[in-house]
Length: 508
Image (cartoon, rainbow, N blue to C red; front, side, top):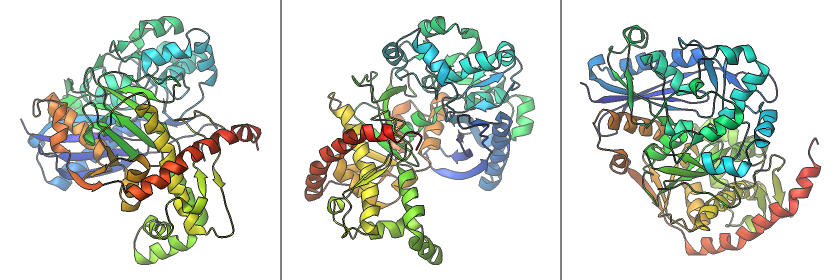
């Protein structure tokens, strides 16, 4: 059997296929994009057949780029976008487009569930608040709005699990992906009988649940012809994208944490037990390994706020960056570096899309506070980054307030590329920030580790600590830490003082 690992990361914009060697080195990668559909203001869907096409095309491109043989591939493993709902028949044929994580059409269904089982109990069982973003509300929506589809549905699948069935003919999901459904008991590691009973859902319509390292099947002869691999190649179920990212960042034991910086951002920990925040500010996913959990807090507009800043304020930087062949964000960082920490009393609340953690307020808005005639664009650029960083600090403190010990913060995602923001986060968090070699590929590496453990190439998830190489370390600077310690309570008070204003602006 070969020892190379193919990891597929089925994201929101497309599938990224990556080929790893046993030492965790990337040999080649390939991306295939697909379309997202928005039938109305609340609905977000994709065509699951596009997932299959993406996996087939990207696999073949990957093999061609790397110039490797089919026999060299030891396993195929997966990471996938979470919280979806795809109804399929007994042969795995889709009965409708998949409703993906961003869809919020199940608002009425959430209220209906809340009448039958308390929010606090759902939070204790699943690790999550009730929300229309999770699979439970979407399955109930099918039952209410499209009963003919619900009745015909043999299973409701998550994105990666549909592709796994196409490859192997086996029904399966994993602990981590299941933990994003509002249906999974994260401690018992099974579909929750209490929630199924309260909602009247049939467990037979849900796939069997396995550890993320499980070899759930082998590539069938028919699938092998389409995907371009050998029949009999083992397929490991893998995990949800957040849990795979944790593994790919090396966060696999208690005391470790990572911060993903993309359009949205989250802080997640590895823990030996679920974390139940008294204020329900955070939530807990299951990690990849049995008995391991991933307490998490997610904010809506992190890199998204910096992108807004670029588009709204930084036209000159965009033009100059194009002429120089560099990223506009590099030039924006250089501008922000001219300003002292604290932006001379200018604060930015980064709530352009409302907010999840820590406030769970869909009506929150973005705000500059403290503008004076002396403030210029450079101040505003820096204030945007500081506002995102201070909001992440609130999420971090939700964990620290309850006594969770965190050694340092690993930084991954596209926003982790620049030194300026990484240094700022070290000062705002008051802790060392580590930047691994693989930033945008961490999720794929986590999926690859699942595959390697599944076929016995690695002894267990702890191998991530050896495979994940740290490239840079950023140490807090005492003077800057003091500035942000002073600003932090002012930032929190600013949001609290504006809550009624935000409510008044609804519809405006």
